[in-house]
Image 1 (cartoon, rainbow, N blue to C red):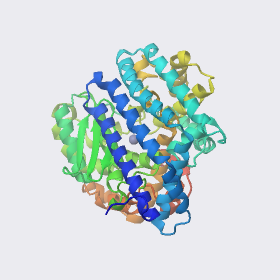
Image 2: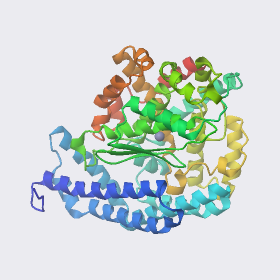
Image 3: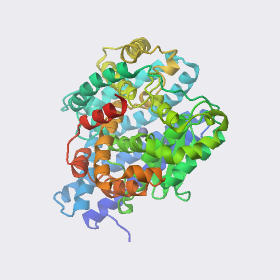
Image 4: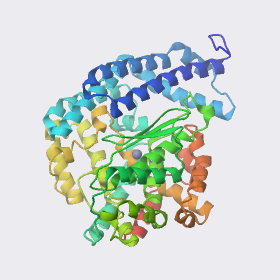
Length: 491
Ligand code: ZN
């Protein structure tokens, strides 16, 4: 069936949105390729093509035809159609504020910025990255000016990732977390938890990860996993989910980051195929996304029940490193609180402070109260203050994350909101599913996955974070269950 101009408005809107989704598919693939297999030298050319794709998507979305169709469909009643119109209208409203030229400039700066960051990080040379950070801040200010009615500049950025969540909402949660996390760290630092020492040969780690993925429900015909410096997950379209991980011989972090990325992947994988090629066919918010990655990584993957099943399989893969390590000691080692400079390696307690630090600094950068040239010094001082840790160099400090290089300001808070949300959802799953512990001990994860699919994954972007939380847990965003979980586990 061809859906041309003059077709019923809903069919026509869906057809136009499907074309935009196809362009996004191509954009995701370009992004995946640039992070997994593209030679470094291709960065400038790739930034050009990504900018062109972004401009094409933008122009299609803000067209007069889409605007007319959205108006004609105002008040459509069927539930899924109403959700589609709501999400499409929100995308249209936000995009129509931003000139296509600025959208393309931002995409281009991201491509160039990430390549510059990659080089700067390898050389631990902040000065070479500083002009790119200045450029990103300049673009962010121009972007924020497109939304003059929004209360604070930071709200504009936050709203891109977490619809309807304000800086004040985040502060409300983070202020509460900060006092408790600092207290927990003071009480637990240096508690004598064992430290694991390699070698953990890369090939054996990949075998171990694969055993876990298979038990979680990884399907080779629709998933793949590759090695990258910075792990991520993305779904190109139905039946094509891609995970990445980063494996080093000295530690077992890759195993946990694989479980983390699986959580992102399975969320996208299980979205109802009926939403394919539409704005509903993506995860609904960054915090819900992160709640799922953290759930599979921490609430499942660091639980003693999980290890009762998996340690007997892991141990023989690393006879040299783990031959003399009892299961109980191993579980304590992978759950120890150990303040360090790197967010990606952080334990569940110190992680929150890494995020709070970034949340504060990016607001200060935007407000101009911290100048770019001073950033490394301010960063190092704040890491020392919050975590008691000395930052050895910029690669392990201000340059460790790629986010700012691609213009992701306002994104970091969603990581910690995701931790908070993960425990709210977890409590409800445990109440509904009964003895999950016994299932994990047998290596069975299907009933948890099915529960999550039914209540969260299949809905894609149909509900906002707030609606979904209320539907699933009956409550609003609330840090208390998360804090209670940490206190029970660590205090
Ligand atoms: Zn994540």
